[in-house]
Amino acid sequence: MKKVRVAIIGQGRSGRDIHGQFFRCTANTKYEVAVVIDKDEFRRERALKEYPGCEVFADYTALYDRKDIDVVVNASYSEMHYPISKDLLQHGLNVLVEKPMGKTYYECLDLIKTAKDNGVMIAAFQQTFVNPFHLGIKEIVASGKIGTPLQYSIQFNGFARRWDWQTVQVKAAGGIYNTGPHPIGLALDYLEFDENIEVAFSKLALGLTSGDSDDYAKVILTAPGKPVVDVEVSSMDAFPEPYVVKVMGTRGTLSATRAGYKLKYIVDGENPERPVVFESLEDANKNPAYCSEKLVAHEEEDQWKVESNLDTTSHTKREENALDKFDPATKNFYDGFYESLVNGAPLAVTPEMSAKVIGVIEAVHSQNPLPVRF
Image (cartoon, rainbow, N blue to C red; front, side, top):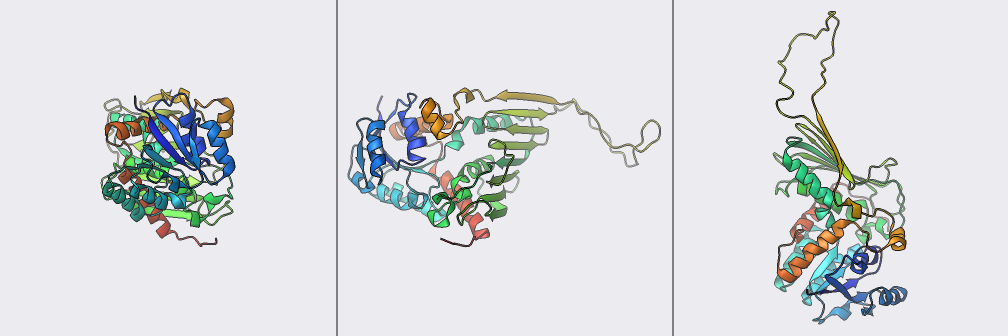
């Protein structure tokens, strides 16, 4: 089996603790890290130990004209995703760029065009599209148990304060650029990437962060004939659920987290239709009565079958435990990406999908301009 030779730009939280952790684990049999790029000398020296046999450089331009690199993972700062990716594509290199793919919809479309013009591949690392919990939600909804979906509610919330580069607008940062591509991507997928999706309502706010970008976002999306999707990304939720998605349908409700799900629904025929009564209701003693009944309902609760491999501990604790535990979505993504690179299979997460995610984020920012302080 051919091993894909990878160059990683950046050894920060994403480049090392997500991509690098996957490449270092025993579950990875298809990729080898050949080159690591980082401006920091300590990180370069550490990379030599963590990726045996790799080369290290301080500048990504060292990748120019390298014919032995199959793909470059661009895990640079968010505002550099577009210019670095474009430069690499123009030099004939396949690129897997971290989210956000770009700051604007135009930047994303330009990367897609540049890749096509140069006969190479561009893709964005949005593994949530292939996360088992998302795939499970879609399967349950498709089963029809809860009827026709009327509303999806997605919460990626927490209670924390940040003061790093991920809080300032000049770095293409903030909650909706950093975390937002995950739930917004799910929202677009639940709406089947309809061409007529619109941002029906949005609000950005700044609460706890020390920067000038958002740490609260509310986005409501819909399209003609489609459900309403309510997306919330907040750092002000002191009682958060762990990445929860709730789907309300015409026959019941699905509530899901990354760990498992609960279902409550009715079955046609088990609750015969009641005729409409136009007079006030009364009980047997002629007292006013509230219109109520106990529906015959079915309940299910289970864990997602693959979640035994899910490690939700911190990056530091992950390093202490083992490199073999990580979000299975990462492996799902890289397994599919390998098939695309090596065997020409269609991408499960296309750059066009990622571009539309950025289009929504750009629209939300245009509706809620925040003062630039830095």
